[in-house]
Image (cartoon, rainbow, N blue to C red):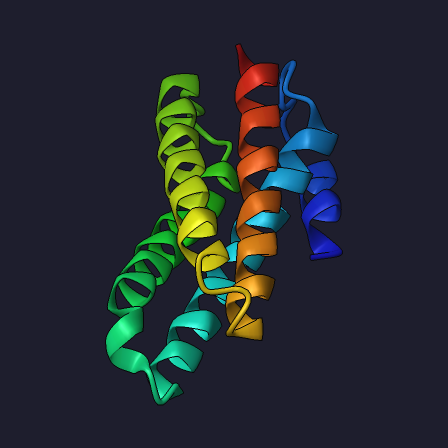
Length: 135
């Protein structure tokens, strides 16, 4: 996600008081989490014990969708509404936390779940950092 900071800096208007470093980190974490969760769900579906991973697949897919949507919302600045961003961030934080917990329950048996839990935790922290910065 090397382009995230560059795109923020190239925006033709003033971004206001938002912490661009935290914003860029959160956007990157959201998109990384979305990709990782999608890949983890797919890997779960290939496991011989797929029946035991139903909740994990569902949580992965919910997390992937909300993280991608949040990354998209945070990438738009024209007509900025802090309340919409905060709502998206809170939803993303909540689903990343839930997905991390679900994947951690399988991490000792499935490496893809361990990797996914790590990405979800990074996203969870990045969302909370930005929520705190936005007030």
